Amino acid sequence: MRLFVNVDHVATIREARKTVEPDPLEAAILAEKAGADGITVHLREDRRHIQDLDVQRIRRGISTPMNLEMAAVEEMVRLALEIEPHQVSLVPENRLEITTEGGLDVIGHRERLIEIRDRLKPAGILFSLFVDPDRLQIDAAKEIGADSIEINTGSYSECREPDALEIELEKIRVAAGHAAQSGLRVFAGHGLTRENVGAISAIESIEELNIGHHIVSRAVFVGMQQAVEEMLLAMRPVIK
Ligand code: PXP
Image (cartoon, rainbow, N blue to C red; front, top):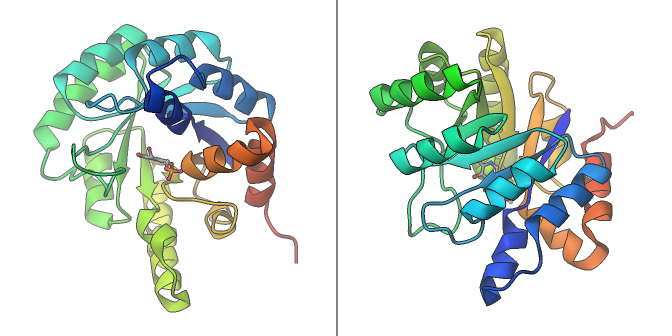
């Protein structure tokens, strides 16, 4: 399973002082050295962490693919067409949220998403949608021609109670299997840690994970390279 490292929160630390360090590009290069398969950045409309210049520098400075997470708004579509990342992942965005709070309502925004698809895909940019583990939303993603979905693992990651955790995990397993069978490529992410990632990386239909906050948090103590290496190890199947 591939690991895309989200370096947003390196920029969060920099923005706390509005200075030049730490540099998310430097973090991205270290993540690649440790074996990351790609780099993810979320350019939020409020620019609370990653800035436009970061996206340009990271696009040019890394040797693995870049996944650009963004809201389905005109400003971001224009930027994506300029920067030409390997892939765009559309996410819902709410200015007051601390982090992305749920998956996209693909059914409710069908027309808008088709319009964006028709601009990104001809430019050779893969078109991915962040969705909850919900069959109807996944079917809608397939129907509008998404290349892939990223399943929101947020509810699973927040579970503290074993029975509830198993229920959330089963939802992800079923949703991932259904999406893969319908021909979508399946990714997952949000809130994953070394402790909870094993059950997700054991799901065969999931190809790729996006992990950020936990890796950056760990990197504060052990460095980016070790934090990524530890995550890759935690993603390896457990041989019983
Ligand atoms: N996937 C999406 C769509 C996200 O918005 C985020 C957070 O920016 C992530 C994955 C990574 O989540 P985390 O930082 O909790 O690992």
